[in-house]
Structures are given as structure tokens and as C-alpha cells.
Image (tube, rainbow, N blue to C red; front, side, top):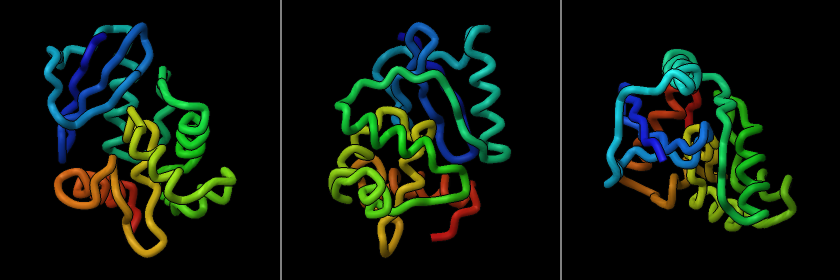
Length: 153
């Protein structure tokens, strides 16, 4: 496992790579060793991520996600929400023939926030939560990402 850092204007992201595939994205510093030096074979992906923070765009990075079949369906649906747009938990639930709470739980288990853009899922009457949090630093990161993508909630 290789953990690569990417500082942004708001937070440093930590990208966990294994065999050329992204497995996890964090913004809390991991216990494992990290490096700011991206190897040559991953620099294309670093460039794509850096460009996202200049102008929001889809992030079609190669992923290796581990979750249930249902979580995988939700995560795939999240990747279909373009930058600058949002969907509600209820809208996704209707699309996937499930409940908003189940969608929220799958979002909470998303190992690659930002790349699998669960920040683009909002509540019917407001911003909703992010990564299992409904306030604090984590929700501030969601607000920042949505503002960066020109979404007003």
C-alpha cells in the first residue's frame, strides 16, 4: 500500500494506492507512512486531481473498492452525478429502489470520498451529512467541495 499526499487549498488528502488502483481517500493523517512524491506511473492521476481543484471535473481514477453489492451499486450511482450537480438521498433511493437511509449508510461507508462523490448527495431540506458526520470539520469539507463546484445549498 502506498499512501500519497495531495495538499489542496482547504485540506490535505491522502490517497491509498495498491497495484495502481485507488483503495481509499482520507483527509485525516493516517498512522502509516505517507509520501508527497508520486511515482511516475501515478503522476497522470495526480495531475487529474490537481486539475479538479482548479476546475471541477469527473475523476475517473482506477478504483478497487470493497463493499457489499448494494454499496457498490450506490457508489456507482454516485460516480454518475457530475460536478456542479447534486442529488438527494431520496432521489438516489428512488433510482435504486431502496430507502434514503440505506443510501446514506452506503455513502457513510464510501472508502473514496471526493473520487466517489458522496459530497454531491444532499438532504431534501439541506446539506445532509458527510462521511457519517452532521457537523464539524467533516461537514465543512463537504460545504467547501460543493462551493468549489459552484453548488449553493
